Image (tube, rainbow, N blue to C red; front, side, top):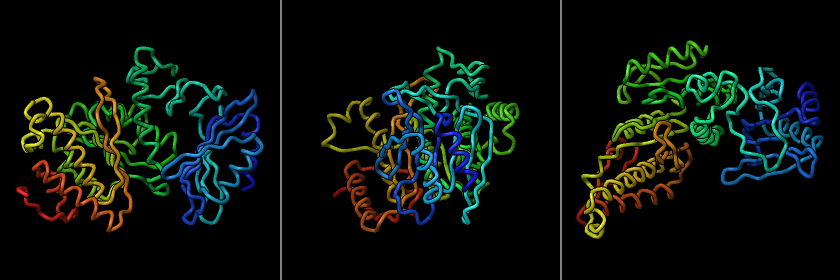
Length: 397
């Protein structure tokens, strides 16, 4: 740990450290938190470092003096974490600690500039202004010098919001092997490039990312950008559809943005059968349940076509989230702003979890009641029938 201690004592006390993330906990870690973020702040005109401890249901903060912060980070590396990424104005340092305690420090080009030390400073984005990022320059969001174009600031915020949703689930991904990530219906792939840049270039994870789309011209354009950006074989794009893709036996993360109608369900089925650790899905055009929903009590609402359409879409996504919970995921529905037309959509974010038999039984019973109430037979239930093992219900009861 001598080299690591020397690095921390050199970079932390004088404010050279602009941000740090410590993750990949040891198997027998008793601390209970999965990640710690560290950033410099200025309190009462003095330099402090704010530590953010991420637990499963909460985040706790602690402000330490520079000397205390250096010792705290060293202790966390010695006792809790096996991996970390330290950002300074002149370089990034990736810290890797083996099972036997051997420390490896990899020095890379800086990805974050020095930050304004103000506790109430403006929002700091995961992709920060000041350093040119190839795909953002290509998108026209950044200039060649790394300045965000004023008229494209909304897109800059949208991309960063998407990455924040990914950042939250990074602790649920394996840190010690190459991660397989598949993006179904990737389209122009700006968010695919953002995901790759953040997880690989900033977080230092080893990735194999596949973008899949039916449009040959779009795929050719994306592969051409990969070549220009020098991303090599770690990011590639293929022509194909969701249902027919079977080239990988294991996938760690599945992303599907705007797969139409039951194509979303086909992607969710694939993800479940791959036992993906993380699923990110933005559905669209949910038509399937529109023709099925029937309930006399709800007739004052369902007799209006536009209301029924919106209700059916919400019911569809609720069903998807609930079925994912039944097969062993912890699922959230989050607001997602579309890249092209900025409507507010829902994003289904599911993380592989452990469900007790009692919890599963309760989830199944509430699903059956909901299904009976609306007289629906969802595609995803049929597709995952062997995994769900849900009993048939009498719709007339």
